[in-house]
Amino acid sequence: MAEVILNVNGGNNAVEVDPESPLLCVLIDAYGLKGPKLGCGLAQCGSCTVLMDGVPYRSCTLAVSEATGKIVTLEGLDTMENPHPIQRAFIEEQALQCGFCLSGPMLYGKAFIDKNPGANEAPIQEALSGILCPCYGNPRMVKALMRYAKEVKA
Image 1 (spheres, rainbow, N blue to C red):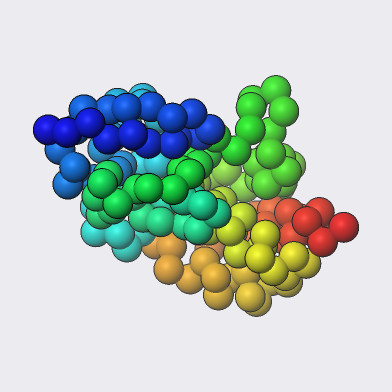
Image 2 (cartoon, helix red, strand yellow):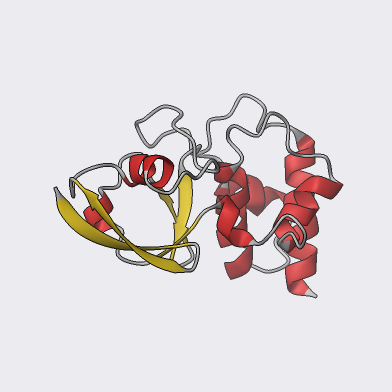
């Protein structure tokens, strides 16, 4: 066990963990976060996605000792009272489905669109092609991401 300092959703906290523990386990167990989920456990599905310094990472296979940047989960985007524009887009397009995989499409989409403002449907779908969610094919998620892309471009 070792003390590891993490910057999660804007706060620096020290946690006592095995440095090789998956970041996902620490986010769930030590922080009580519910956004990132354990899906496949093999960094294939995307349910465990977090942003670290604006880049999406699969937290189920990332050792907590390697999580040295600013980590943002779905909970860290904004508040329930004042949702982030991408969260608002998913709500307005009714694109939430069951919510289990939501970290994947929302955080990968955010990272891609923030670097490619105004992206259209084909590049957005390509950027999210590595997310293995049974309902991801839902056109509402794509519409939500396109809505967010328009807002970022404006």
